[in-house]
Length: 565
Image (cartoon, rainbow, N blue to C red; front, side, top):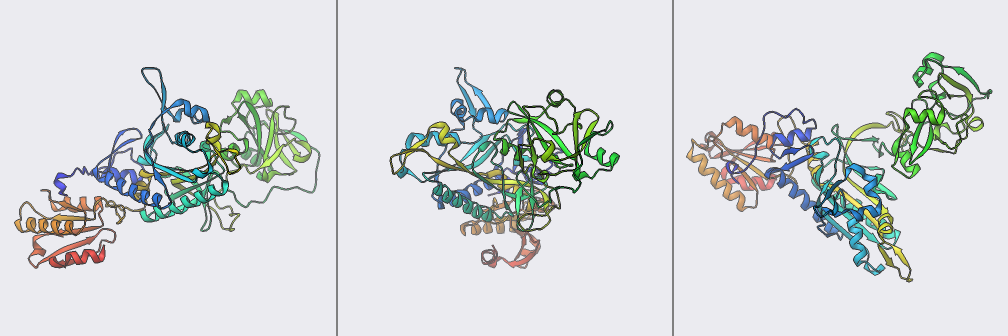
């Protein structure tokens, strides 16, 4: 392919709104262009990479028995209403009304549609197991799309679904996808790790995410050399508050200027871990008081798992006063009104000698015995872990890192089949809901994640698996030298006949521009043809990853490339 005929609009300057490394490099190297917030056009060079990624995914999905579908992005809203996800996903879903008044959504994922088709055709346990997948465009109305293609409003996803008649079958399907994901990401050359995660609005029994560490990531993970978990579900080894020997009677004391835990510590010399912070949430329509140790932060995802709903939020100031009689900073579990559910973090279980709000502005209680003075219905792991806390699994200090999610696998169970009536008859003649799994990979994210770890100040460093072209052939001063032109054309023909995909820079631009663009585009091998070396029958070869350069005889180039590439 002649570069003069190929559309690669490279940039010298990066737009100010491009913050993520991958976003910057994709714009500079002419892989993508922004059309609207969270919406990108893939240009020829970038789309070649997308097609390579898709082919790797297809090969590994076929290897585990996956059958490829192409499901419509335009879905009747009624199907989604049956599972409750129109309400659960809220404004994330794009809604469309036809001129005839029919309501549709642009699908953010396809669990409902797969289940719809499974209901049509799967009637018996003999019809399973099945693995159905597609590579299709998805739409999500992200409120703050950023980081380029890492989080967009329109994106491509490989979404796969397993259909089984037994829970043991689901385990087998889940493991097949887990193993396939390892192969896909290994083949793409990614440095990734796997974390336990929350299923969120997807629902399900088990969930794991495949992540890469990156400062551009929006996920936060806790990791050691042997452990990794999304901060949403991560746990750590922290000693509980426990009990003190003297169990004095509860008493109140004035705290007119103490609105925070830090205020109590500083003004009254109270140990932070002896302070119990209360927060009030409205769960569905009911008030819950959640008790945390000191400055520990409530983990909303853990609270969602406990309550069984994503429909929860912090109480407003007006609601705090209505339910507790006090504003922020003076709320506590002692004497709380009937009808308010009270739960606490595990670290506070049966603790005494505690300080907490007295449900009266400017007043706190001390010497609280949570077993004696409060009606706590249950204790749970509710806290967000902190940097440096010890890992429960291996005892190492935990690092808190930003990460990008590459893929997510779920054991959905029967959530969707029950809602949509997708049933089968088992060997005993009994009717049961189909048991499902869901397995997603962000196609553009694979490219972005690769670039986060494989670039330098000059540009991209492609590997063999993902590179848009194998070789960059550079003709120096080609418009002035007939021998350079003839040599390049002969080399291009020989390399292409040998099976290599070659980008031939035949442009009438300066040598410096060619070298800079070649490093920016980042193809693994650059073959540089110039008059000086040709006088000795030589050409120069440069390896982009190492910057190693070698002078090679022209007649040896095919053998050399075959040996090195």
